[in-house]
Length: 416
Ligand code: LLP
Image: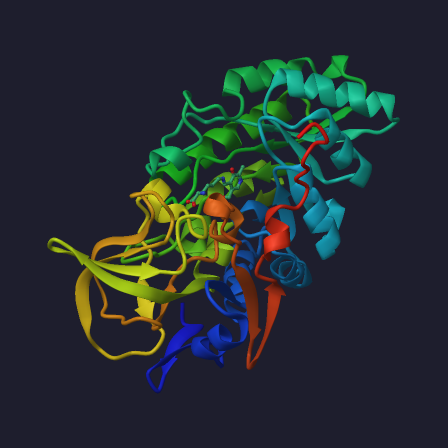
């Protein structure tokens, strides 16, 4: 997070004081660092150097067009999970030959959209999906390049809501199901089975489950190759954790070292689809204090950002560091809460926090992934602005929503 640092007591993103951005763009506002995006992307890319590989960025983590454009310019591919994300990556200038499409519930329209753009790979998660993809491809005179998503039945040892590779999770096919489905591929007219995909969860901070799952899935790659399939791609998924507080997290190089033998043995092009690792620590949410209040023994800092802007603390009990935009050195035990009408609306709970007064600015750190992308209009709150910083330059890359945005598409019928 070195791109966010203090200069003369003021928190800056690269060379721009966050207070300047707050003055110009208002609050709450997400601020992203171009240098941090580039550093994280390059770290991943360099970790895989020596293997034929492609780092696909998981768009769900942060789909802002400018963020996507920056990543495309570094050479990244994209991992998408909806036709909406396909629309974004095409608008941002990604090469569709670098796009992989995952998800358990791809609809006909979504499969067609992917076929239309001739994307690199559909990560297929079930037999009915493969059947439907084949029918659509045949109907439209296309071929579909497919990776089977295997569920290696490994517990990623992360938060319950974001572990995806256990047998009881809805994702992917067991090794046996994948082999059985592959055995039917000859019956399909328009499917090229050329890949294996896995993704076992998110915010993974332990190497062991990652290694175990990659080894299992690599076994499937090799078994399919033995059975005569030309498996050219092995997608190891995303999920590499980041430091929110004081977690010891594997580095990309540490991860790749640990799985290198398994990857190399497959002789395939290695894909990974990290989201959080690339954008997580590249962003902060800048919010300003509306009120201080006390209730019994509790002290509350009421901010102008709430759970609709950053859902992670409410949804997962996630920890985000809270930093004062202008340091005054004093802290106090408090909750940082938002204005939303739910007791679960907090950004930090029972913590030692900057002792901020009304109108002071606070930065909620590590908010670049699953921040804006999970924001909502709950309580008819306008979603925040987004800003991208590059060196001493900054630009609003998404305007704060206005009142008209809030009712866009709503209609009052004539019978009222
Ligand atoms: N690939 C697939 C198939 C995924 O489902 C995901 C994330 C990724 C890649 C990227 O994972 P990452 O590298 O970002 O960990 N909202 C939660 C995270 C949900 C992750 C869902 N899938 C959070 O805020 O922690």
